[in-house]
Length: 188
Image 1: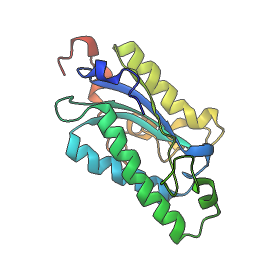
Image 2: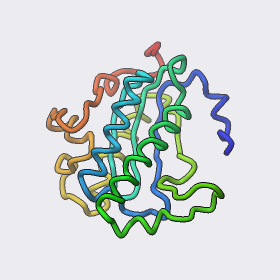
Image 3: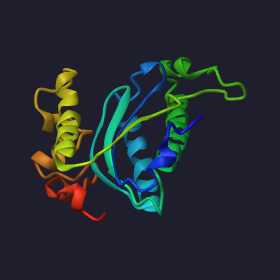
């Protein structure tokens, strides 16, 4: 699969990313599956030294804003590894749970691949300034409310809204300092 021009973005640092489960299957309705995704993000965060500025794990997809250090890992490498290894972990847990969802991931179109969890591609936008950053943070935090999953942003467990509104870092650490910085002059 092509990188859709991502090779041209080797010096970009801030990205709004969305990636989706194949067939829009609602995998992330159990804490155990959300926790496996977060475990993989944390693992690759240590390897690639990126910062998470905001996130939400919705039932069939997740959004996040990430600040990368291109010399340590580009967004395409980070997403490749997170998707690949979280898929292994989540599919293994679905098997252990004898989940009815497993049928959604059998016999993907790719020959030689037994099953597939994530859609092949992910969507990303370069965050160019503070206004765009706050627009995307607001979008991320409103996602569970708009979907009717909670009434208040901070009530959704797998969202950085809790980090920003209640200053709770218990589920996943989010670097909030960038939210008050002009990204165009940050020198990240």
